[in-house]
Picture 1 (tube, rainbow, N blue to C red):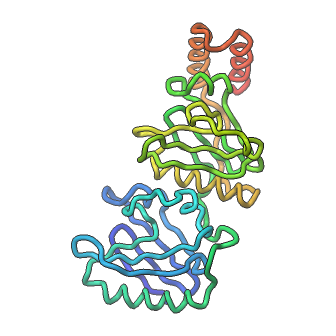
Picture 2: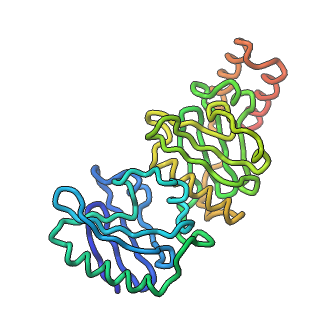
Picture 3: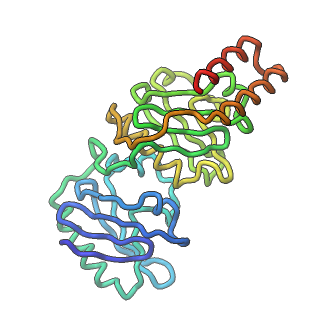
Length: 284
């Protein structure tokens, strides 16, 4: 096809085997779109396309991804708001005829491709390293493992006693993402070794970070969850960009100070304090 259709917040370029979606940058563009930048959606990852009326003199062209084809949508699990759906293109009504043409062309191409749940992820994931700040800690993913570093102001004593965490993707069975826009939003890593154990509350679970107002926003935590989920499913690393590995000495000092406060308050034992302090100093 090789044609381009421009709508609000995005431009779709139709190719013979895929749709390239380029998201605009701007104050009114949803932050998730800006974070994604652009996405190439193979036609093999789609099962349909719809065109319907939108709000205030607009029409909406929407691609329907196959179940299991896109790690972003799998991690979202239906929690994205309509305006943040990366598969929707909103257009003014004067472009409805043009949108109908592209919808019909896509339907013809999709009729020749597969349907039903995909056996593997077909849409590329965001590249590692990825990171975001949650209410009770910082989460980082380097392509092979997930690290949680607890915040001295927000983490529970249970998490401080457990210490900072590192989870190789080979030890995980999945990811549970609950949107920060709803009550008790969090990111939980599902561990193979704990599949039969009852799940603790996220604020007490060292395999979880909790969100909150201004923490773990959708445009940061959802791409993170999608990248981890894709690595878990493939049992291998995702593409990694160079990243610094040294810890900030000021951050280490801050964490030791908070550890001392927990020790003085009786929330950690002498042995736990000495062991954790040694771990932190070793990271300098």
